[in-house]
Structures are given as C-alpha cells and as structure tokens.
Image (tube, rainbow, N blue to C red; front, side, top):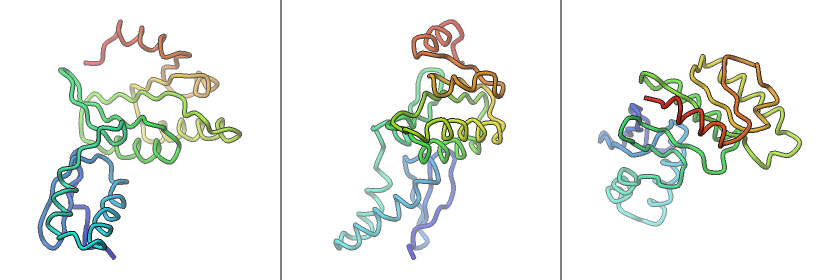
Length: 171
C-alpha cells in the first residue's frame, strides 16, 4: 500500500505523504493511481523520496490530458487527447464535483470505438444527465444520433460549434 494519499482537490490534487502535504498541477482524482505509480517507480529506482515527491508536485501536464488552461476569461479543464470512455467518464465525474460557477461541458465524438461506439456515447449522455450537467455542447455524428436527448446542444461539425461559440461566447 502506498503512503501517498489524496488530501484535497480544488481544482488541483493535493497529496499527503508521511505527514507532509504537496500541491500538484494535476486535475482529477483519477490521477491518484498515476501519482502512486510514479512514486513507487521512483522509490524502486532508489530516487530519494523528497525528489520523487517534488517531481510529482512540479509536473504540469501539457498533453491535453488533465490539463488546466487559464484564458483571459475562463478556466478550462482540458482532457481531450485520444478521449475514450475510460477517460471521459471520470473527467466528467470530477468536473461535476468542482465548486465553480458557470460550468460548460464541450465534448466531441470519441473516435475509433468500433462496434461499441453507439453504446459508449449513449452511456456518456446518461452520465451527463445523471450528473445534472448544464451547458453541454456535443459535437459530431456519434453524439448527434441522440439529438433531442437531454437539454444539450448538438452540433454536427466542429465548424458549426465554433460559429455558435463565436456568436455566443462563454464568459
């Protein structure tokens, strides 16, 4: 069992290890197993514990996964790289728990799902409804086949969604 525990999430994960707290630049409680794995690997290779924990605390994702992007008017929880059901669902669950105002969800089709595509897109729609997510914009044909389900906005293409957002900026 790992000595690394989750202390808080607001919006970044704060961890605790041997009675010392560390703030990270990671979003999503689903990243705790990743943190624990990084800790274990570092310790396995005899990297000093302080160095391992400081490296974890200083890591800031830039790969469109669990990434926090601050714009002039908005804070964006970006989790888009190779999005799939196993990444989208936990990201939505954590996003729903964030105590911030005026949340918007923008999702595009999850690609390369083959025969399970319809079921998985429908499952994400059910999750959005279950989480009482408002201000949801869905882009693509896989989500579009459920147009009318939920109080969500559906766009067939990225360009269509971009035109809508240009005319109706999120502020």
